[in-house]
Length: 372
Image 1 (cartoon, rainbow, N blue to C red):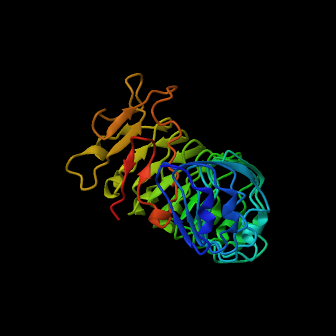
Image 2: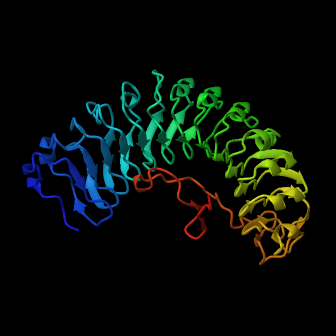
Image 3: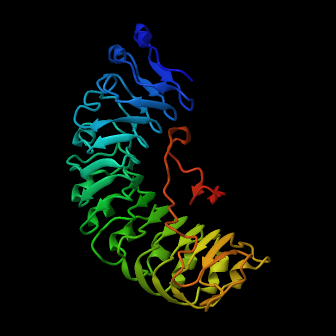
């Protein structure tokens, strides 16, 4: 605990400040502006506050982890404009305002840019004018960004993680996202996009592991190609849309699928019996027009028994049969809010895990650690 002393700049050759996961408080001293040898600034998960003007012009920074504090101030073109070696910049879960600066995407060495969880970051996404492969992680969810996704996002050829969910984005989902062939994680949910089907370009993103189009005004049917072309999927979230038709049997081909969220649509028919061959642990299917007996998914003798299912098996006019207390953890009635809420499955990337996903959590209680 404590604060960073004003005379820290006396350590003029200091290259690393590592104070993560403590309870330090106070502001960053103005004197830190003189610490031009500093390369690693790791002060995340503390109780620091105030602005960070004293460090945004340091020229030799490579790793900057300021997430999970109470920093504030407007993000603009003055933020780290002359740090050619800056690879990781994480300002997430603070109180910053402003917009996403265009200079982060021009002649930049950035591999990770995480600005999520700053509700006052607004405005449009910038243009991405230069084709590049350096940037691997772009996390901008839970902000107030508006406007369209620019087609130039297709220039970010190296992206593996793109999260734009929980913003105010509009328009059509640009086909240029389909140019991001290295994507393993794509979350676009809870935006105000134009109505439309599941974008066909997603068919070409064969490396996807986690895909969420929750609450994006998707309609029509679930395409058959999801089960034939996205073989690596571990999480598929299509909840809170207007999808209709049956659950396609091709989903039985997704032999890595652990989390399937299809709740709050207009789906009909029965759940394919072949789902017993999937490694499903979470299946959220409530508030649809599904029918039939779902107890087969909970059978003890099943080699891949479901762990947690939410379905329309409530006592008031149940649409499906499933014994509550087995893998049917929650039985809903039409019109009830039930337990599903948003079922928010976003990955909060952290540097300690090399920005890889170590667990899947849907709220403070529901967490799963993937077996592979």
